[in-house]
Amino acid sequence: MSAETGETEIGGAETVASETVGDAPKSGLLELRDLMVVFDGFKAINGVNLTVGEGELRFLIGPNGAGKTTLIDVITGLTKPTSGTVTFAGTSLIGRKEHQIVRMGIGRTFQTSVVFEELSVLENIDLAATFRSPLVRLLRRRRGVSDEVAAALETIGLQDLADRPAGILSHGQRQWLEIGMLIAQGPKLLLLDEPVAGMSKDERERTGELLTEIARDHTVIVIEHDMEFLRRYASTVTVLHEGTVLVEGDVAAVQADPRVQEVYLGRKKEDAA
Image 1 (cartoon, one colour):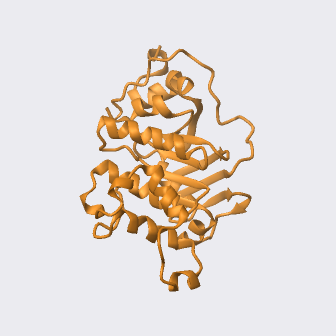
Image 2 (cartoon, rainbow, N blue to C red):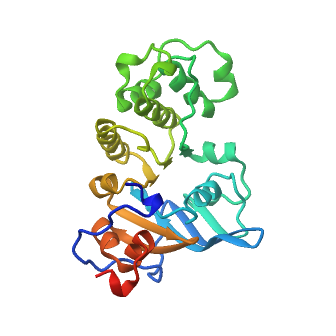
Image 3 (cartoon, helix red, strand yellow):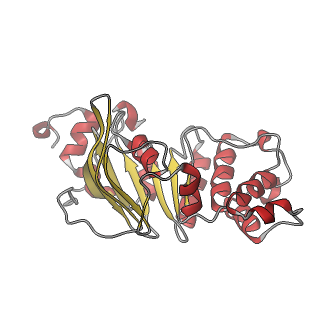
């Protein structure tokens, strides 16, 4: 069941010492320092420190109101932080517009897939690939399929549907297409918001394999609530709660941490054993 409702089973792992917020921060591709976002007096993000290394597949979890989406909104320029810093590949993202951040190498999906249903699968990826192209290239008539578009199509496994309209795709296939559209833009960092929500078991398995594959060449941050999916494919997990980083570590450590069990299951620490 969804962790969003607080009904997901968290336990089942041996107790492992987990990383905490107090650990000395390490440098990485993406660095958030003392990040604060306040909406009308409400602290949606409250002093978050987060480092994601290059080539990492990081899962970001937490109950409703934890600040997960707000955090992603700040990284992608949709929300301006009240204070703190966000650095990507050594460059500050604060004050940059969304399209500028995309051109820097950050791509994002949303909970609801955004594809052009009337266009073919191939045309969707090709259109996405042109986003970072020089204007003179866009004015030329495109001939054939570019290497980046062909590679993205092969990665998501939709070659057989390349000429079919995106509107006929299943829910899972639409999510893969959107990931393929991001890959075609050549990003260094992909931010995926609940990519397996609403998928069948087979689609979730294929998506897990896809995430593992693209993480070989990209850094990937996944917001997810499917705990079975997380246990199978996550390596490092960051848990947010009330706008702060509650705990961070591997899957076993996070599952066994009494603070996480309390947040998700509503149990007191002394009752969580």
